[in-house]
Image (cartoon, rainbow, N blue to C red; front, top):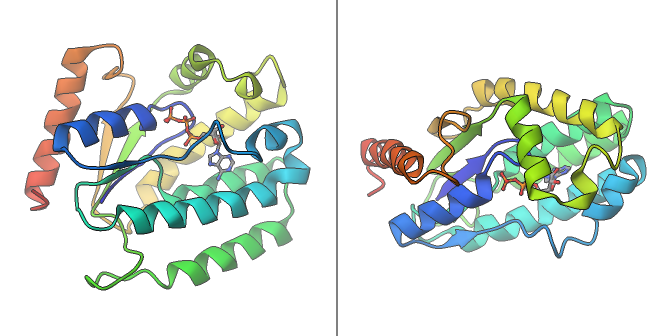
Length: 215
Ligand SMILES: Nc1ncnc2c1ncn2[C@@H]1O[C@H](COP(=O)(O)OP(=O)(O)OP(=O)(O)O)[C@@H](O)[C@H]1O
């Protein structure tokens, strides 16, 4: 399976659509609209952060399990980024170290079930695609999409959260070593608005997929 990664509004869901369509494979999404915890979390990160992580962990496991079966199935966000998000929340004093430690232990225990064999219930990705966007692009996309609870006008503290998250993401991708990986420049290639950019991105991913023998 191919797994997308990148900060909020980077374009993971759109690229998931494009890729699944291109490969004729299945797409697995993190559903935002029917997530009951997310709006609560944006209201009060301290209170709902830990609950939200548990909710996501559960959902990501579902997605990973369901996406087995084709190396070209696509998941719109990796499970490996959640800790980064939670650590960023904690760095802003909105989660405690104990909460982060408990979450990390739970994640580690669950990920020990991951292996590379064909029989594995939960496997590591065949390829992780990271969409890098600058902070300005990130803010512009969040604004354009217009989800109320994500807007910085709604909560000025979100600006710092987004800024820190964006910085942490590049370091996270550098350190990521669970699978082959590929970075897409989301500033250079606006694959949502520009058909040529979409073709360029698909060509890059096609090449990587071919190099890895996934197709
Ligand atoms: N582990 C997490 N901790 C806190 N918030 C999270 C976590 N995972 C996802 N979210 C939140 O869920 C929402 C959707 O996340 P995500 O970035 O996957 O999708 P998106 O914003 O639609 O991005 P894209 O446009 O790239 O598809 C965002 O508000 C994001 O902050």
